[in-house]
Length: 484
DNA sequence: TGAAATGTTGGGGCG
DNA sequence: ACGCCCCAACATTTC
Image 1 (cartoon, rainbow, N blue to C red):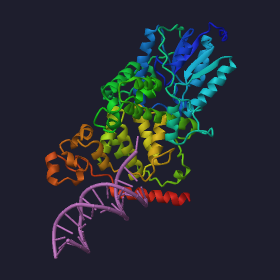
Image 2 (image 1 turned 120 degrees about the vertical axis):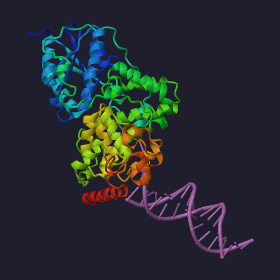
Image 3 (image 1 turned 180 degrees about the vertical axis):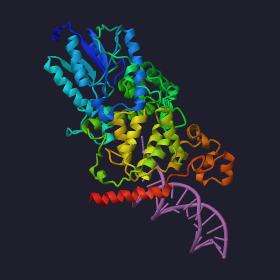
Image 4 (image 1 turned 90 degrees about the vertical axis):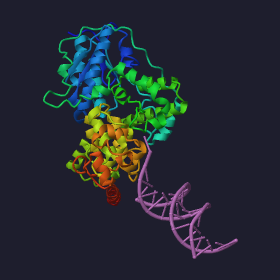
């Protein structure tokens, strides 16, 4: 028989999801008042097509390892399970006689559905699921004067700013009163999150840049505050430099909270204008979660219905060239290869590669979204979907479709010295700056001296820019004609 | 968080 | 000296 769930001495389950940290963790804080059993469940079935992607799984493996070690220092274990949380969590609660399950709120529609089912199942046994919101602003709280969700960024950001600073972070507990875990837990290796043996080890380069886990998140934040925040307004646009925060995977996996970042930035010595520029990016992230919360179809369908009429022309060969970084546009190829090598791409370059994919190549944004989902260590359902729709012109407060990036001008503007392109497209490294972003226009002599043979050592442009641009605008006109 | 096309202005070359 | 034209530089409109 199970223990009585109502007893004040009954333990709590601390269910970790995308909140793999001990500091500023409201669920942990609540659960640690009594005996606590920390658990992580790898639930691919419930997530379906939005199960953690390959790069994300690499991150998750290392982050769980760090979390388990941190918990051990507090005197607790971390139970690892694989399967349907909808079954496993209520079962576990019964087995140990837990009165409550504490977890952080998730915005993904599949997770919300699952949480609702679990809450119901727990309730039937006299137990409860307690969700703790760790966002800057709860999506159901920040609404317009008419009580509707925001659909435009600027008023949303103003509303967030008006709320003032979020609550201060909650310190990590000094120790946890653990519960002996029931049998059934598996080892980290048995979660099989890392690339399997016969595959090439595509993640080999990841650890040169990343340190998953809470300590790594703290170090990354410190690096950003010390070295980059003051120059952020311009530095964030130069992909060849370390000008961005590179906090996105740490934030996605919840190794650090947006609130912690917010307070650290506010307390830094950097000029207030630079701090505000960065906090606005944090608010974009929040906005995308807010939009996902109110529009569960965001990952699959365009928010603007007329875009269901857009004449995309799916071309697997073109997609393959884009994925491999062989489009013939150096800034695009550098970005796609950075993504493959490091599991991450500079944000400025994400916009450029996505624009080429959707506009010059007329590929459905959902296909680009899927590639990013699998290859980014920071792949986040709200952010990824929102930003692809932003580029495609179909989203909330999206970039107008007719804003078509010129990959040559973008490259010359933001990577004028070519550090970025030379790092990730080494076969062009010997080209002088003047021709680096437009090798097909370089004199034959210059190409020969740089060891470049177009069509052999490096591709010709996959589509001429002017042609691609004109074709994209025609497609837009065709959509408008169809949509009436 | 575009880029290209089109419009306007004013300095300077030139007959 | 003057008017004309060219065109760079900047501004505005359009996609």
